[in-house]
Length: 254
Ligand SMILES: [Zn+2]
Image (cartoon, rainbow, N blue to C red; front, side, top):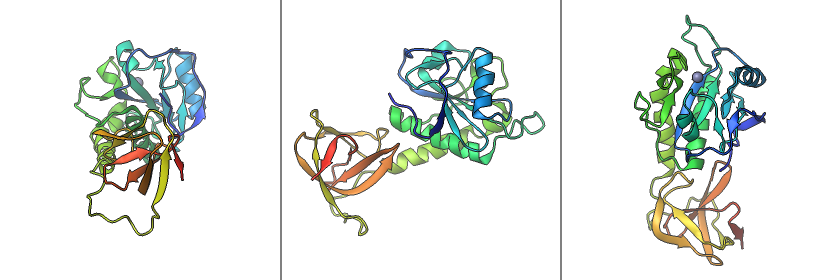
């Protein structure tokens, strides 16, 4: 389990259970009910005995308070927090009158963070159902609270659609056998250095489906015809058209 590379600030909270007892398969979004900095949010949440995995300030900066492998104390529901990544988002206009508005920068970063969480944890799709049964949920589904506020609530479908669009874009079938590699990219060869052999996926990223029955074998050499960086790891498209493999840490250029 990893943490998001989008986080540029880390201040780990003692308010958590180590480790979480459930696989990460949900995301729960909160608002700070204030225009707080990451430090300010940490202090406010910690002082009331809570925590969140991440927080996003109005300038789009992302903070990590509880590592993903651990359960935050955030949504008034232990069972939810054991399976969800929880995110606090700042309100640039923190009042009822402004519907607890969130800045465009924070909203954009929230979408980036949700995409990254899905990819690294193998969540293939964000399913916003308007209740706790979906995997994109609000604090108010678990407690009598107005969190995350009318503005963010109105964006949940948009957030899910945007994230799913990005997840799907990468998961289109890799190449047809007649497709030519792009001219700008010079194909190169890699040797698999991972003893177990590599899974092959239909697109770049762990969120993409496995190509069944196909592995890139240890010690074998493959030609890469395209590259894509996903969540800080470089993925390569196999010349055979079978799919994509993760190059970072598992292969060596030859
Ligand atoms: Zn909340």
